[in-house]
Image (cartoon, rainbow, N blue to C red; front, side, top):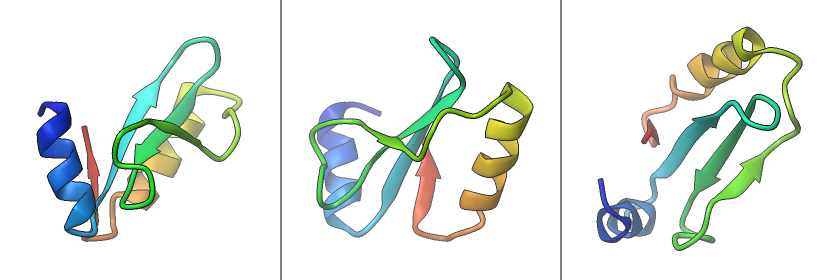
Length: 67
């Protein structure tokens, strides 16, 4: 998915999440209020497993997708 496609999804009301491992496990997102830049979602997670559990909970929402 390129930036143009991500912008379309954000304008349609979707939130896009992305997992990161470095420097600490964390999640970034794009949404209708920031369709052109990634923002950090919450704080760092103590482990990748904890971050992945948080992602699993977030992805149960129909308007949240993972990039």
